[in-house]
Image 1 (spheres, rainbow, N blue to C red):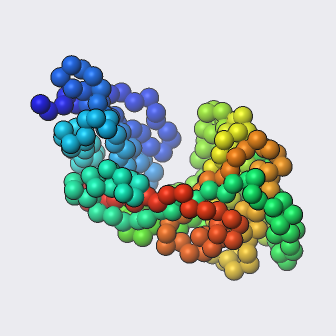
Image 2 (cartoon, rainbow, N blue to C red):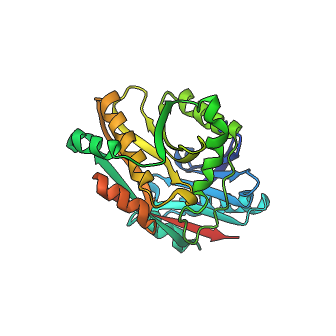
Length: 293
């Protein structure tokens, strides 16, 4: 028997995206799966939708996932989206499901973890205190200070050429309002945002940045968000410098933290080299898939 697919009202709406949701139920009205479709609303991403789909293990191979995917793809077409992306861990059921439903693999992501207990504070300090002529480090908690807000927004274009391989991802446009909204979202869910930047000493502008989000209780694992250096400032070791400073901060400020997590495109050789040199170890790999509509 085919599952019943019920559209739901999803209260999770952001300034730059909104979500549609569906619940799959069996003949006795027991939930057996769900799907969420994130619709990007930024000017350069209005062509894009992102699918997140889950089916209870006992209900797989009963066309539950197919019915949910059909509902989401139909909605994406109705929203005049050009493509739908979705992720699955390598070797997982989703890694087989997505290509069987017309999705093609467009990107491989490596997920790595740095165990803080195994990280030598003295070695980190040597990296952080090594001179970088023409640059200085600065950091803050939460929302960007007013005196750096405009240059921080401008520095976000460092991510524009981040390797996305064949993904039709578009470009994320940042301004001060979006930066502040993102920081508020982290704060509202109870987490702590810490940002380290490299400042160009010649004019006070931000040449690069790295962001770290830590659980509010300072336990478990922290998560690196964006790390980027503007093209005109690359080749000076700023990425490793900033990330080392972020790690040292985590060690000193949050002694109960277990480790730091990050994900990097397999094709992003410079960032992989930075992570490897700082001691991050592979935990798993995921594949990003895309369905062209």
